[in-house]
Length: 185
Image 1 (tube, helix red, strand yellow):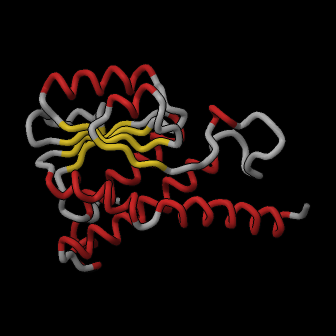
Image 2 (cartoon, rainbow, N blue to C red; image 1 turned 45 degrees about the vertical axis):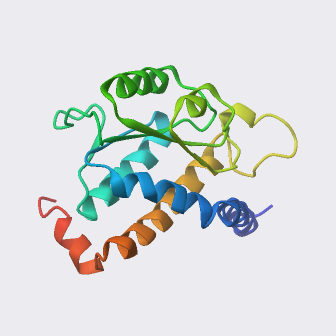
């Protein structure tokens, strides 16, 4: 297969997963975000990079969003939301953070491809993106993309659709979002 054919197939795979998730999963994710005071986010590896992109866009919407591990992440508790990613259904660090958030009284939202995993089952809200992850990348009928790349690509596009939905729900313009962008680059 040439690169153009590979790109076409990868785009089709991402589109197929998004079609299954939209609009229901966006609406399911938007509600707890809109009702949260502080939003803390966490993910590992490449999923963590997609979660960071979501944190940045939530900030651009004027929401109080922070990445766990940053020195400026506030204390979370009642009325707050922890958003985590656990594509394969379990990461030990994510499980530990969920436990701490629940002790503090915060709600937890998990983005996953494996809704029956340990981490999603311990969350208050689950967003299901039915894509290949490293938990199921072995075998013949998988994605053209390696390992968990399909899930990660879907996360990015899904989060952008979420941001468009939240932007409309909050009445935020593109210019308003731009005003939150850093001028220190």
